Each structure stands twice: as C-alpha cells, then as structure tokens.
Image 1: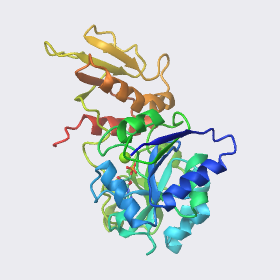
Image 2: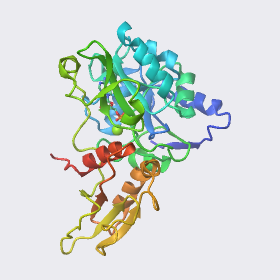
Image 3: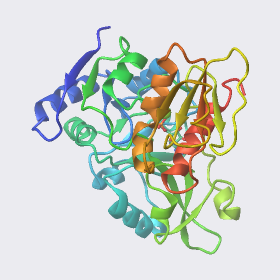
Length: 347
Ligand code: AMP
Ligand code: MG
C-alpha cells in the first residue's frame, strides 16, 4: 500500500483535508494524525474491524487498550458514563486541562467496542489541543481510537518522518503538521472515590500534566498506593516494563558519577544540559544534548524521542547511555520513559 502524506498548517482552514481523512476513517482505513504529544494512528473508534487493524499494523497485544480522541469535552458523554460522585472532579479536570495532554479513564458506555478497551469496563478519553485530531474527529462525527503511530514497544513518533519510518506502506495517509509541541505521551488519570469518600485520581501514566499541576485540584495516588478504594479499580494494563525502546541497548546513568566503558564498545551519550562530569568524559563517539545551557525540562521533553531515534539510527553508536533527569515536573515522565526504554525487551 502506498502511504500518502498531506502537509497541513492547522492555522489555515484545513476542513477539506480533515474531511478527506474522515472519509478514509469512515471507510475503515487508518490515518496517522498529529496531536500535541505524539502522532497517533487513528481508526474510527466505533468500527471494531478498523480498530482491530490498528492492533495488527502496530503488532500491539490485544490486552493493551487504546485512547479515544474526542472533538470536544461535551462528546465525553457519548463514550463514558461518569458516576455522579465523580462528575465535579471530571468537570474540574476537563476545565483545567482540556483541550490538552490529559487522558481520563472512566466507566465506558456499551457503544464502545470491546476491542478498543481490551474488554475493560473503562474507556480512556482525551481532548487533544491539536486542531488536526479534533478537526478529523469532528468531520467523522465519532471519536477516533488512536495509540501512538509506531510499532509496539518502539519509540513514539513526534514527526511525520518518524511515522513513515515506523508504518510507511501499512497505512493510507499521514497528516503532516510538523513536530509535536509536547513530545511526550499524555498523562493518564483514573478518577475514583477514595477511602474517605473524597474524589481522587490514580496516576496511571506520568506525562505533561505533572503531579505539581494536579496538586491543589485533588489527591493524586500512584497505582497500588490508594488503599482499598483504589484496589477495587480494574488493573491498568499497558504499563509494560519494556516500552518506548530503541533497537540498541540503553543504559541510564547518574550524570555526577563516572561511567566505566567496556573495551571495544562504542557508546553514545544523551545528556540533559551537556556540561555534566559524565558529558565531559572522552569515551563517547557521539553526544546529543536535550537542553543545552541552563537546562529546561520542557525543551528536553520535546526533543527526547527525536534524540533517542537519532542515536538509534547513528551507525557508529552501539550502546546508548542516557543521563538520569531531575526528579521534578516533566522529569518524572521522562524518567518513566527512559526507565522503560532501558528495560530489556525479554524481561
Ligand atoms: P498509547 O499507547 O499512548 O495510546 O496509550 C494507551 C495507554 O492508555 C495504554 O497502554 C494503557 O496504559 C492506557 N489505557 C487505555 N485505556 C485504558 C483503560 N481502560 N484502563 C486503564 N488504562 C488504559
Ligand atoms: Mg504507545
């Protein structure tokens, strides 16, 4: 199959292109569509056969459920049954973070096919701030089920070029709106009522909506730490140990401590600011810096996956070493991805 690429500028009127993409989705085809986090591989969420093709093309295991993208927050009720007790918290989170990089896991409505939710009683819902995904969902009139547009376990694509390398030839169309502005997958939250009867959220995946941003809105618990009320929620699948992984081994290393290279191995370093004691060692065949100078986590997050890809494609590098990042703000989400990238795929 030939994969077409259409370049778009979401600041222009793109309705004709969104209509074209929606028509392909309505015919059961797959289209890669940008969001502010990463590029998604979209299918009509209400077409179970099309969604099944997403799993086939990505080689994604069927137990790993997909996120549904909505054209706006009002469409939430089309796929989720929000319990009355959680409605005020859901409204507050939606008002604060939608459109944006936040996904809410909520009780599903029966119209959502099992293949989307991997048979779970819940569905993951998101309203992205990217006009392209919302525009196509609006034109389709249905939510779009869209995981990241990469083969399962690989690094998520943050550009149309990265999508083509992953899935070119297997999908109909890529909408190319340039690089993603956040660069890390959405924060996933599951609202629930805690043991004191108060609304809280379970942080299923760290992302651009950081713990700090959530503080002041509600209690945030890590999976398994929320007592009995949290334990009664269905398990969160998909938090697989090895994920977001380059083809080469990746080691995480404290930037303040010396690295002891093995004789005959060519190492490439991913440094945060480029001026650590680690970066100053002379054992690297390549050094790439995420945010040169004073170091900004936002800039590092935007570049992380593209830099991991570039290291993976650099033929001189055999093993990637990545500096541990500060444990604050976006640093948590980046460390989560790097830790999974460093886990062996057969672990
Ligand atoms: P992505 O691969 O970025 O599309 O992320 C999808 C992830 O969302 C999955 O791997 C799960 O971790 C999470 N997810 C989706 N649906 C659910 C659900 N119903 N319950 C819990 N987690 C979910
Ligand atoms: Mg993914």
